[in-house]
Amino acid sequence: MLKLYNSYSNSLEEVLLSKDKVKVYLCGPTVQSSPHIGHGRSAVVFDFFIRYLKYLDFNISFVRNITDIEDKIILKSAEQNIDFKELAENVTKEFKDAYSNLNCIPPDVEPKATEYIDEILLYIQKILDEDMGYVSGSGVYFDTASYADYLKLSGRKLDEVISGTRVDIVEDKKAPEDFVLWKFAKEGEPYWESTWGKGRPGWHIECSAMINSILGNDIDFHCGGNDLIFPHHENELAQSKAAYPDNEFVKYWLHNGMINLSGKKMSKSEGNSKFLNDYIDEYGGDVMRFYFLRAQYRSPQEFSEDLLIESKTTFKKIVEFVSTVKPAPTNSELINLFKKCMDDDLNTPKFIGEVFTQINNAASLDEKMLGDLKSTLRYIFQILGFTFEETSTKRVSIDEIKIFFEGYGVSFTSVEQAMKDFLVIRETYRSNKKYEIADNMRTDALNIGIKIEDGNDNGWSWNNN
Ligand SMILES: [Zn+2]
Image (tube, rainbow, N blue to C red; front, side, top):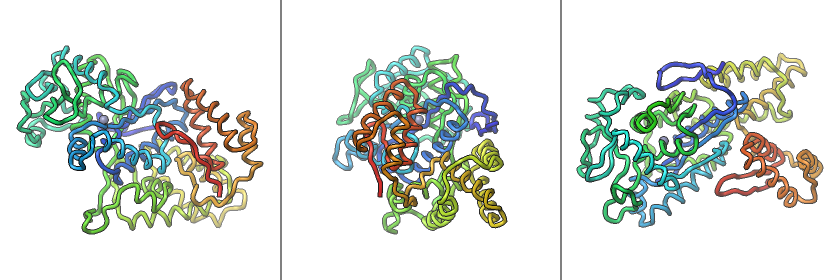
């Protein structure tokens, strides 16, 4: 039975859900500057989570948003003397590259806040109709005093919240802990029209409105970094309870721990101000995934380049160990061990520890047992989203490619022609919301070296050398 730590109850809870339709929302990036290692961690640990749920046969709707309008984006684009949209698009592209190179399963929907302004306005109106918000000279605010359960998620005390609140002089709120739903535009700032005045949405309302429009009033899992618990998730919850008082909003709140930079400041002057994509370029997606796999997702994780180098060496041992076998779940004991660790709040480091004990003792196994251990390990790493791509020296033969396409009823004359037909079939599944089959088709294609991209940068590429 899968147990996960719910930040709302502060306890490990059994996941009691029907497998038909599980709704997962992960707070995505505010696209103001290049992704850093912490963004990689959040993306990868929740990718392990999603992949594990899929392995357990949960049918998932996965949404991860992009916050493409926010104070910091406006500030940074002004500094760079470019339009806020241009900055947001550039940074979004960097995030998409990172997600794809880390082999994270793309979300079924990846909404941008600026595409949901109408929904956001309706949501704010609903909060005002419930008398839980108010309009002031600088914007529309949430009236935290009207919501009795405020701070229940984060467990913070009101006086510490108040003392920690930096009151902007332009803000004219009833109470310092009230937060903005709609911020009126100052001279030169981007804006949208609203009945209250020209402005832009607050950060928290974006997620509430996007969740509501795409997934409905209630979702199963709300995920993000633990730095989002307060104020972001606390405020999302308050808004959602204001607009939809009869709904629970979220069943399980899951939060990943932060990256600890080992006291070493990553500053430009020290020449070590590397971003996530630099590390991915240097070490590859699999090694990065392996580094993240080595800490339990809720724990803080130490980071240094030495630790990446060490992860590279350690991962190479696994790659070499399984290099001669095909993935297959032939060792049921190992599969059970994997499930036991994952069911225990995704305890990936515990599993890795056990794996190395078994690898180190492999010399005592007979040939059959050794083969089973290897193929099962490869199978499990495939479930966890490892590609073994860079280390694969095997060139796929034309016969293998033909067999692959024939398996989907596609006749083969060239990769280009066959891919056209293959993608039509896959698109049909996608438009019928059969995402799991479409996902499997993408994973299958990867086995013959064809990488398929969905979303805005959709297309495919074939790497066969
Ligand atoms: Zn959010």
